[in-house]
Image (cartoon, rainbow, N blue to C red; front, side, top):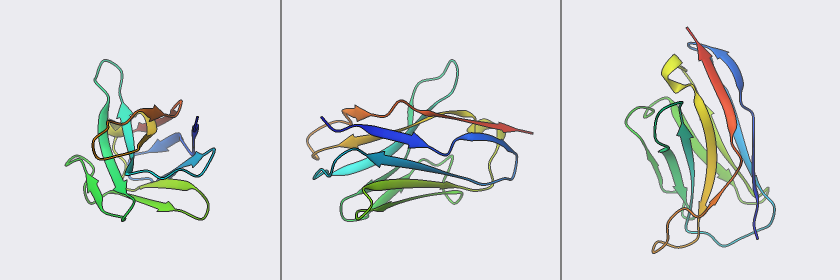
Length: 117
């Protein structure tokens, strides 16, 4: 079974940038990969996704500030976060969706991002 491992989280100040990475344990043929986040007391939300054809989508709250990308050769997905805001504070998870008829089934353990004002 494929495993996903996030890295790159940490502490930041408002306006700073961070880059998250998501490494897959094995090469898989997937429909899409995504970045979710969950803040305390809130539901998990999808903030960015990228398909196998490199089509991307973003939540309105991060559009223009976050950029999702992937490196197939390295089996890794990235989330470049700029102009960070305190409301971006959350645990960030990467996830895998194997087909367009499926949901995101595979998740990493998450990495904490904390943004102070």
